Image 1: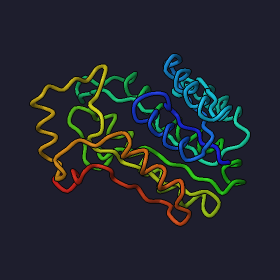
Image 2 (image 1 turned 135 degrees about the horizontal axis):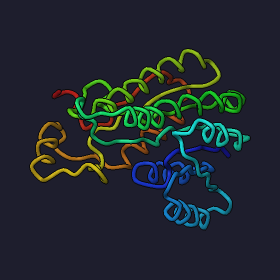
Image 3 (image 1 turned 90 degrees about the horizontal axis):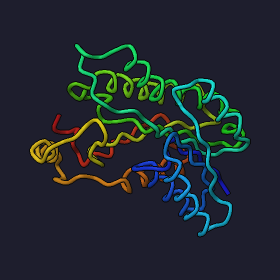
Length: 239
């Protein structure tokens, strides 16, 4: 039975990726930062379905030492899903060095060094790395400069590592479009939401299941590497 590590695997899209891979007979390692309650609840639910199939690891991914400790605690892995991400506005004139460090460390540094540290076990198992990128890696979102840059870095990381780690490890990406409305520091009103939806040829918002299904497809596709699949309802056609 294969094992997958999903960073940020307790909430939102990450939780759905966890559920989907688990439903297809993967053992799951859920990484979380602050979502202890949600992570434990999800693990308990899935372990009731299949005993001892889900474990938890807590780590602050903006801390390189924590990233290395996380990686060193994993002996066997088939799939690494770099899903954890920091997202909030950073208008150019107001962006700080602290913003840069926080976003880049979580969105770029952590996935790179997790991939590096776990490459031995992934190579042994002919495994794969799947990065959750963003359509804004290529089409920048206004007032989110650092986030856009971080996801562009992750896109290039995906393609670079696909070359460097072949033939033993495949590296792919999924670029979500409008899937879930932002939380925390970013709130959209109905007018803003409708403006986004009007740009989508399929005329609807996607769901976390759409992203999870793409991750599952790539995890099981032994002849695909270096590719980033946009799951956006066709939105990138109109930008």
